[in-house]
Length: 175
Image 1: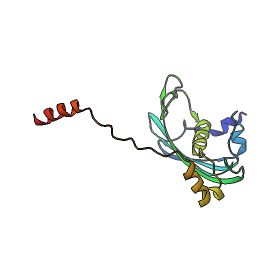
Image 2: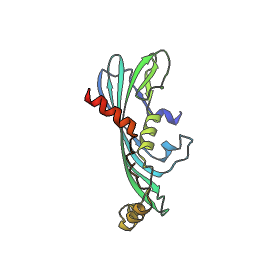
Image 3: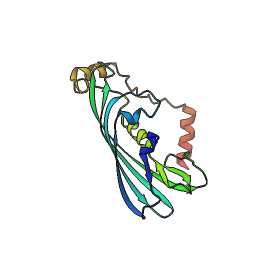
């Protein structure tokens, strides 16, 4: 049996209303996707709430747990807590369409919906862009260096206005 099917939610026999599902997400889940990961040793729980309506489905996905990251500065390994929520509306139509990021259309003959890609997306989006170990994040010396070399925001000087425009502006204000 295809391992990605472990993340199917069969809704065909469910009554309208709310239904809870829970998935334990480990390294074997991420091995299903052929991408390079920026993290390892994930210990994640995906709590899924399905709110079934007669004409559509609402999925509320919450992922939380920890992953191991490599610090961008020190190359030290550290554990990072992650958490992310995702809400998806699934409606029924003639064919599969996921071109809208908040609404997915599935074939009206389908009786199950696979959550693997949505769970993957929720986890990956919760990984920080800049991976800093707590020893660096909490280091005052590092913050001083970062402030010193970070680009400064330069305030734009107000340009002097051409005197001809000032005269026209005065005429407009007087009317």
